[in-house]
Image (cartoon, rainbow, N blue to C red; front, side, top):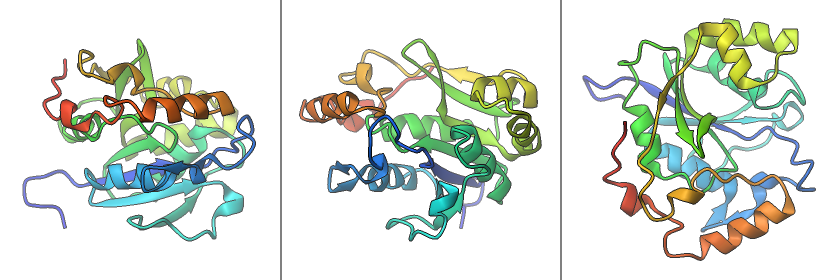
Length: 221
């Protein structure tokens, strides 16, 4: 149940990638006390009352990790993260939805909370964090009214998420998490290759890598 006065919000972990460059399923890479997938679900669950996992269509029957309500298949196979976003927005029962890629383990819960706080107040259909000087469409707040337009882009072969968002509802709203927090330079790293994985493991050992405590007082502009 959502407390009175709060906006209902559903979380979705985007986990339908092929992991082709890595060579094996990145969702099952060990992280903290579980896997990357466990880690992503646990973080979203601190912000959203219910969390789902968007998976490859060929993996639709898999059991969800602890803390997730279930797994839903991407809207198309091998169509990139847009297929997961479309699946999420077509599945959800809430207007606002927090979508988060499985392979971004350094993003603090405070950033997810800041995104969630925009639900109900933004006049845009999407609110995206700005990290490393560019929009992060795989860490964003999405309104389900974008589902029809994004489905159209998917079917027409426009698979780049930012281009599809422009077609579906115009430019998103952006926010800039404060950058002068220890570890902030690593927040937007994702894991696509073996080298990325090795670097993420190295960074995870640094005191500033898990920066949730420092980011608890995160200021946004």
